[in-house]
Length: 240
Image (tube, rainbow, N blue to C red; front, side, top):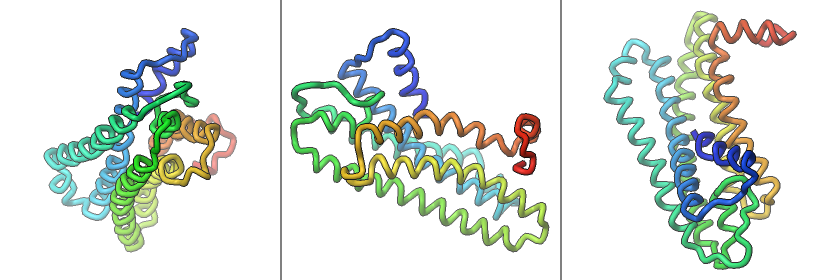
């Protein structure tokens, strides 16, 4: 989702040779990025709960995950994600700036914009750290609980084929969770001593551009047609 916020502007700048953005456009880009990123934290947790219900309570799946429940989960995820954008966008964009306003980044990310401020930003950094702790702790708790229950259920499955299918259902989601959360922890929770403009940009490229590009491939590994096509392209057939 973040891919659709940052990449179009970046490509347009490359084509037109312009690397400028207005304060209003920067604030809008920041708000959308924070909202979509925050929502993704909770959507990944909701997906883990969906897999828990599908594997641990398959006969009750259509009751526990009916249309109304899915709409409720989706609405809560978007609401919690939008709070991130509504809180940090105005706080960051109202900082006093002086001197050069060149952002050493390829989009208006909060840490990159905050570095341009001539005021004390420690309160904002602490607030973002605490917010990220909550936004990571709650989904991670849901994901850990869901997959712990799934593993206990899978262990009791007598069929090897059943265990394989259950684990295959979860493996793609876990790969996306690990990629997304590790990058977010680095960018928003590690102390300033761990950061540099170059490293921050590399990590941002990874989870803003590369990870969304990998997601369709990761999720499609369970698709038989995609698997067969990959077998023909790759010499190592044993991986599939």
